[in-house]
Structures are given as C-alpha cells and as structure tokens.
Image (cartoon, rainbow, N blue to C red; front, side, top):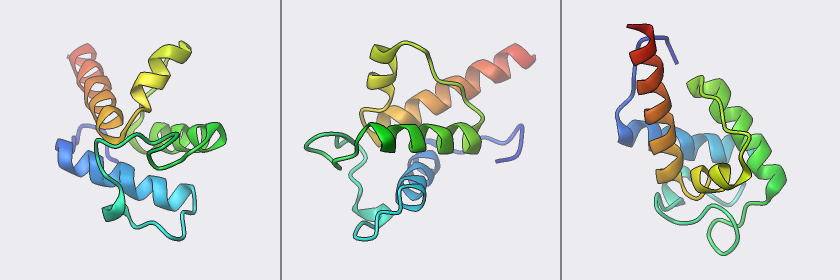
Length: 100
C-alpha cells in the first residue's frame, strides 16, 4: 500500500480476508466465505498460533503497522477480521497524526 493512501474500512476488511486465504494457503476457503465479525481462532475460522504469526507478518507488511508485545492486546486485535481492520485504521490514523 502506498504511503499517504488509506483504504476505507470495507476495503481493509476485504484485503485482510484476502491475506488470510493467500498467506495461510486456505484451499477450501474464499475471502468472501470469511465472516467479518466471526472469531479467527478456535470455533471460528479455526486458525492456530502459527497462523497468527503468518497473518501478523502479512498484515504488518501490507499495512505498515506494528503489533503490541502484550499477548492480551494481540488476542483482542486478532479476534476477528473486524478487530484487525479497526487496529489497522487506528494505527494508520495515529501515524498520520504524528506525521503532521
């Protein structure tokens, strides 16, 4: 993503869904199959801790965000596509504010 350009929430959510399918090589899942508010781990999409690391690296590279070292905070952020998108937007807004 280019610096200075921000996607709207729906576009961020859609891109995160694409990253999940692409980076985690989910053969039987299409991005459109992923429910935005559904849990990504456990009974939701069923991702595991290795998937979380892969997804975290993909989101960091795609959106230029940094995650907390606090496991509880990261658990909240990685709960769903919606919570990840909210984190990305908040991080990008904070960076823009600092840049001004």
